[in-house]
Image (cartoon, rainbow, N blue to C red; front, side, top):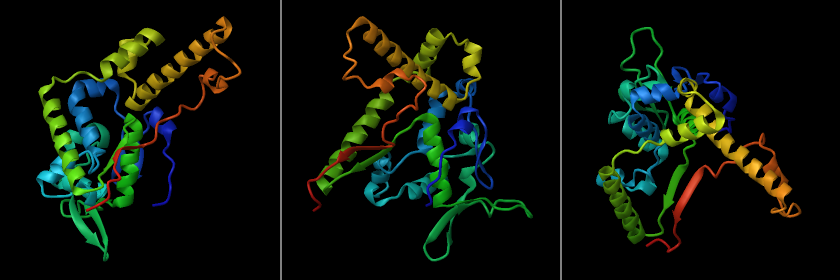
Length: 266
């Protein structure tokens, strides 16, 4: 796939992003997410961005090895299982109903999802191939600041251990009541920046998350400046870029490699 540049300005301004013909990504507001249900919304968004590593238990229960399944293959499976109905993904994908898509073979080795069997006569079918999928999910991850989970196991024993640990985590998470992710962030920007509740409700999720990150940069810059003037900071050893609160916000690597194990394969 050719490299492409995520249009962060369009995301920030809540403009719709045309990924491909018939595939348009919208940026929901905080108010829309609250009305839909925060827990349900983030579940769907995270499911869209799921990787075989994050779904290793589901794949194992279906007799599949997460290390042998590609991201796109997992996505096609979830589409065909009805995980991405229009009701579930409406805030992000509008009227697009991914649950109506089927997997088709185009050429010798190319596979793509399409709704060609369900479109009305005279309408063009929508096709989602590997490239379109990659662009769509990259945008969704950027919008929510999700990190891609990639786990690797060196042998079958380690693989089983990671699956068992993931299963335990899922069981523990299922017992816990949902705790709002957005509420403390909304409280922070509201108190620090003076945003009104109505203003926050009208913010797009990417705009809001970017403002939260910017607030953290501003606080760091203020603290560094105060430290300089008070003499508690050695300016000779200090990274001066921390004083620029308008700087580009540095992100962590988009790939989360938490389990790269080197025991060697069986």
